[in-house]
Image (cartoon, rainbow, N blue to C red):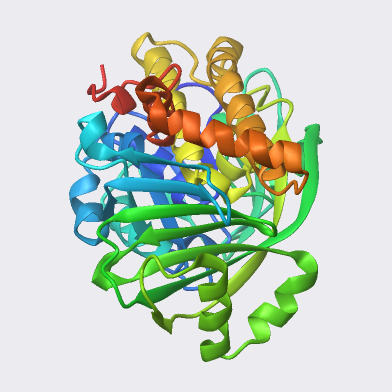
Length: 409
């Protein structure tokens, strides 16, 4: 290795986005380090808990390009239809995999299942040093390198790299250390996540119901279960979480209805407050910010992880283009190209999810009428449904090669 670098690339954050980046770049002649606060496979790693993750069809393509999909697919339940409605009103629309000529619009797996596949592959990557558990205590950069100060069992040390990538989540230490400007606000809502077993088969249909307290999503899972994302106002969270299982099932049944029959069982529940957070700058000198560290979204359209995975695929493409051209992978040109590529989609997805969250929680009659007419019109117009389906599948806008079904150059 030439130059003042301990590594070509250092990734801070070993969650799903950081691990995907390391795997996607492995085998390309780069020496990498992955730094995380948790040891590999540590059950305390929040990124690998039992939350259901909706994977867009475009994300399947990206994982296929990494030869990871075969490890994920056995436990990933396909979404073949999506039914969108405004609870108690006439507006609805539906999307179909058959109409889009794809095997599925998306898939549902738990973060733990995805974690097993990612960690299993990472252990096979001889060009990735996993430094964990370790605490990053400072980051900086200059013209020739980015510098990471960390504390681990070996003591305090500083590592230098051509490119530093922050994939350390919504509470990103790297982002805060750099003082990157952000747009951020709280929705006054929280998501209660769990899984339920309905008396009727889900038939691989996902439901998105807009209600007066926020959206409710019911996603098909394996073993006849459905993943639940129930949005409630912050002042309701404590009471809903305190319900016993029977009372919780009844309350959720009242909210969702009986389209899937009676709800029979419920799994472990968790809740988290909802916010929008977007960085105004996703790169600094020799540093890139990706995934939830760059954008934390309302879960209304299930786009969070999928958007982060497209960050990964785009960054891989720009880094490999530079590396194969024997250019500096952390140079200003590479980072500017990445930021220009990702800025529009990150902004558009954030605005769309925020707009939907606000529009469908507004009780004003004219707005309610307008949104229901909009849903109905979309259901009646094939091009409208197709545009919505392409966005839901992560196939809209400028796509990295893997998301277009193309192999790496």
